[in-house]
Length: 634
Image 1 (cartoon, rainbow, N blue to C red):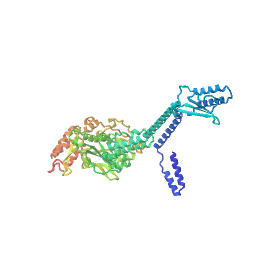
Image 2 (cartoon, rainbow, N blue to C red; image 1 turned 60 degrees about the vertical axis):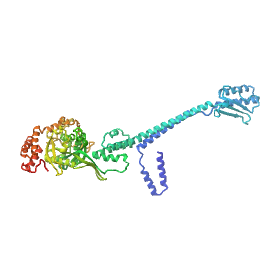
Image 3 (cartoon, one colour; image 1 turned 90 degrees about the vertical axis):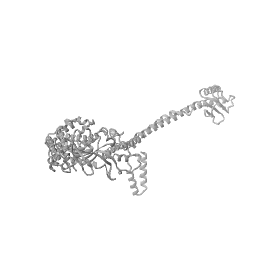
Image 4 (cartoon, one colour; image 1 turned 120 degrees about the vertical axis):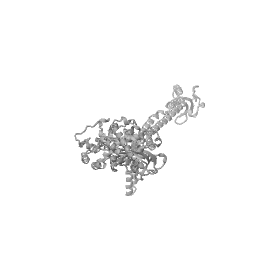
């Protein structure tokens, strides 16, 4: 603070000696001095307090450890003996001799006197006093241990010199000197430790935490088990800038993890790695080849929905993403792209583990398929949550699409892709480039034609366990280009018309409002709308449902009641008829295939999309296989 005051007044004084412009510049510089930080203020306060306490301790302790330099008894006794000797020498009073002997004996007995010499006395008395034999001798002692005192009269004719043994006092001074030195050393040591502790707690440890956090992020950008998380600092609001920086770094790590995703893990790691020694960002460069399951998901009737919802469409998309991403992540997948009405999900697979069983690659195929099936079921269950909009938006939505229900279509494919950053130094996206990514999008687009919710390619189908295959059926075969191989298409039968309510799950069902249409959800009153749409909730999405997924693969296909219900609508009898029909269809026996597909369509109440699609395709050829028919479309 004194330094700041000095700087302030020195700047102000210098400004007076310059012209007006220089004064304005000085004032501007003074105003630009940043305010004192909380860390600096805390360090200053702690240092000031400890310095004051240290000085007080020294002021109290040092006097106690210092010896008294003046021995008044020695000089007083000498003056008394010298005065009586002068009286004896002058012969003023006969009784002075006894008083002189008493005072001299008192001097010898009460002090450490080892030698007394009188000079200038002509009274016939001895000039050297008799010292007891047990006293030390002058010649045996060091000069430092002797204390010599000489007193004389006014005219310096007569004098008295006494030598005292000061060894005890010198010894005491030495001991006290050692104690004083030790006291100062201990006090300074404690002060140094105390100051160092403050610096370590307020500055060094937070900086080490920051470095450790950045190092962990660079080594494992997608890792969530960091040594220091934002949650660890929620209740530590000490106002320190270092705490704010740690919290900010943790938040930035979370934002990078969400923004870049799994595809950007290498980008984050390379640019945060301390060992690279480069200050510039290396965002662009060669990608790397990976093998992954690609799942493409699209929201049905999204264009019409956007026109009805307007600005509330963001709530709609993000609510779908919450359900989809929470399930995918629990099934060891990763969200890559969010393209408005579409989502790209990935499950990376080590190709060295593909030749073994499904367990070797951790049932990645089952998890990908289950993620989409479970997402469709949870979206059907949480329709109220997905369609929680204003009365105006709901009115337009149901006027344009009566009985609207939120549905998605999904395509699943397995293949290679190049993972890396796409864009420029101004804007990049971490994603995948590969025809296999496009294949998953093509499969999703084909779900509209086949009238099914999920389409899978043969490479993906080969990754499934027998338990998952039990609910799949082959719906067609295709060849996109002459250079490509034949790809069989499969679907997993999911019938959402059976209905899934909150009562079927572990969540507590919410009370429905009386204002409802013929749909399965209710309109919200204005008060509830204002609190949710206008940001009353922390995330703006409303009450987010919590969805827990069991990783009991592959048994989950038989233990998940929702999946079993959704699959059971397509009976084993229908599945057998369909198998006969698809075999006949590929063999070119379209008359037999037509009969079987019609049977399946009739037993499904006219709802089976693949049957309708293949019957329509065969009808274009009058239910007669072309001469060039090889069991697949080109």
